Length: 242
Image 1 (cartoon, rainbow, N blue to C red):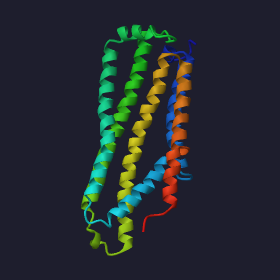
Image 2 (cartoon, one colour):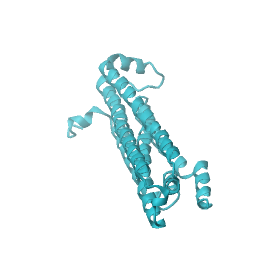
Image 3 (cartoon, rainbow, N blue to C red):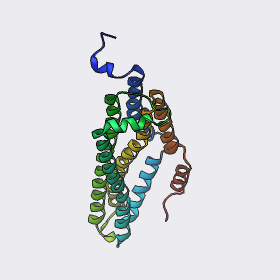
Image 4 (tube, helix red, strand yellow):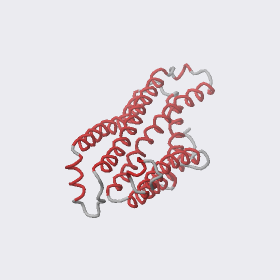
């Protein structure tokens, strides 16, 4: 033990293992889901196809007020979560400022782990870092939706498209921008889900590991085996309306 660097001695080996599994699971699942979604149906891949179909249909409309309203509605969700993230970050920073009282309060909870004030601060810092990451992803999603709104507003009139190839090209570009905004929003939501696993660390390292596995399982089931995915895929299989 004396041979280990002093920072590694701040936490027991179970806590370090839980942290490694948490970040490895987060990064690993995000990477795997993105690649796996290109090989089999997923929520994100399916909705991206619907976004492209939406942009293609927009090229046939002279009045695109409805399309602009839909973009605005879609950007409202990341805006709400970004605002919520700021409030949560503020609360966590306030808890860091009074960590002694907060630590005593947590210790009164049943099954909560007894830790030093420094370790308690590390747990709060992890939660704050998760929500900071989520905030940046949500705000970037808002900007991307604004880029998509610009593309919808700049689209030529329906009669200005001289060939179907031009419509397809516009749908590809605009649908891609909308899809990137949705992917970024999904990253922020994934961080919110995993923050619940981080909360389990206040109880024990084993609860932290179990929470990480449970959250990743829930994310996997919803993204690749949910009922809404079946409904989305059935609609795509029917083909676009004539």
